[in-house]
Length: 400
Figure (cartoon, rainbow, N blue to C red):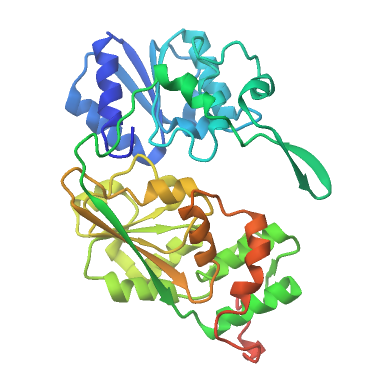
C-alpha cells in the first residue's frame, strides 16, 4: 500500500478481526509513538509491544501469536540474509505466529529483495528453495560484474515472476484508490558556497588529503572521495579520526533566510549537518515529532530515519539540506507531507552551485541508486563547474 494510505490501521484492524491476543509490531524508532497512538485510537482487544528493529533481540524469546513487520523491505538484503531478517524468521518459527509485512515500496531497488522478506514464513510461495541461490536459479537473471578485476555474480535483476508469485498474498492500494488527489511540486534552489569550500574540494580531489591543525581529511579511495565531497558540498566534513566539523554555513543560512517564517520539515544527510541547522535556527528547530506537532517549531530529520513511518502533515514545505544516494530515500521521504485532504505539497532541494547533488538527483529520480560508477563518470563535471579558480588563498584551510 502506498504511503499515507492507512497501512498501520489496516494491519492493527486485521489482528483484531482474527482474534490475536499478543501482537509484536516492529518498526522504525521514529514511528513508534505514531503506531502507539493508532493502537489507542483503535482500542483493539489484544495487547501490543511496539519496538524498533534494532531492539528486536531483546524481545526474541517472548511469546506472540501475531507479528507485524513495518517497512518490511528493510529485510530484503540479498544474496545473504541480514541479521534483521534472521531474527524475524526465528521469532516466526518459535511462535508459529501469523505475519503481516507492511511496505509502501516492497521491492524499491530489485525484485530480488522479496526473498528474504518472506523466507521465514512457512507458507511463502518460495518455500521449496532452501536458500537465495537456489531461488535465483529460477527467479533471477544472474549477470556478471567486474569489480577490481574480479568477476562476481550480480543478483539484482529479479524477474517479474517474483511479484506474480506474491500477488495472492498481497493487499495493494494506491493513493488514487484511497481518494488522494494531491500533487508534489519540486524545485531545486542553488547556493553559492564559500570560496574556501570550493578551494578545499579542489585540493582534496587533487591531493586526496587535507591537513588541518589537529586532524586530516583522507580520500585515498574512490569511495572515500565520493563521501567526503558529498559532505563538503553541503558544508561539513568528517575527519579520519572520526571527529567532524562544520566548514560552511551557507546552506543553513540560505534555508533560514528563505523559510524562517514558515513551519517546515528539513531533511539532512550527515549528522554534522544537524549541528549546522541548530547553529543557525537555535531554539526554532526541533528533532522530536511530538514537539513539532504541538509547537510552531520546524523539525530536522535525518533522511534515512525520517523517510518512513513519519507524517509531517503540519509542515508547510519540505526542504532538503542534502540528498541521499538511495532512490528509496528519494521516493519515500518526499511524500511525508501527503494527506488525503492536501491538494499540493511543495518540496525544495538546496544544492551547492556546481556540486555533486545535481548528479545524485538525476539518478534517484530515475529510481536508480547513485553509485561509485556514477561518481567516477561525473567527477570532472562538478569539480570544474563551480565558477571559482585555483587561486583561492591557501591560508583559508581547515581550522580545528
